[in-house]
Image (cartoon, rainbow, N blue to C red; front, side):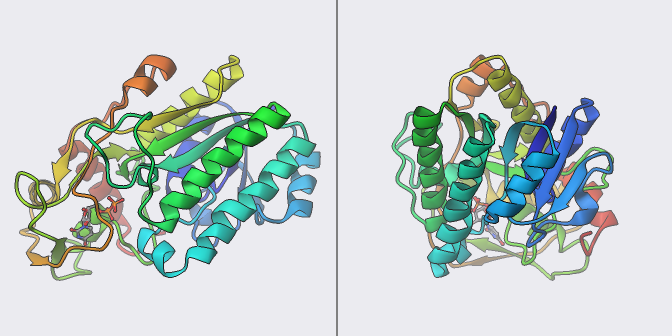
Length: 327
Ligand code: UDP
């Protein structure tokens, strides 16, 4: 039987497809290529170009393929854009996932692993953040992901579907051979933007805010390697295959780094001075986001392997320096 990966041509999706194929699993990828890259799809995976909001298309794939479980990455994920265009996010993330769930229920596919986000918490009450902490998103992106989690919960209760929701912190890094990596257009994430400087694509990196209540005044985030995230999806899938109950897990390293520390590490890794300019805060950025991933470690047996920031940035640099224009 095959594992269906929705959004398998995106950043985290493509790394998970690589990990599944390495495990010898049969993988079917669905992606509309709105933001994904066909070049990032593993050659052993079977690819269908189409939209998860198109039920006829989904039914067609479900009839042709023998799908055991789904892993769902197909969503928009830009916080700023979600504030400007909330309905685009409600349509793409929530409405289309409703169609997907309908098709899954009708075709008796009863297991799904789902990409969620630290943005479901909003401004945290405390760090490290636990799964049981308050969820009060501060933007439509986080709201739609939280609403998706709830849609899974109620669909599960009514129709026997089981899900694992994985709340990622800051995904970064690239596949070990440097052939696939992060390629967003436009790019908005800190590490790829920093690496555009040594790549000659940007003159300096902006530091958004220097007056946060943190050790050096800049925001602190928990950076987690994309391959560690990929492994967590496989463990979540195995957990559901063994009969595990629906549940939610944070995924992070449990260690926070400030924007200044990330830039300093990138200077060390690339040997480039990477000039930085301090600018105004970016709207909606919490001062500190650090995960407690104890639950994922205890219940799923997850163990992140890439916990040094230097190693994470080196792996990202290995991709970006060889692919300055992305795929
Ligand atoms: N950031 C920054 N300059 C940039 C891009 C990001 O200072 O050009 C900061 C941003 O304010 C946040 C951190 O870097 O505190 C990580 O941002 P990113 O967009 O990578 O991830 P997020 O935490 O928003 O998911």
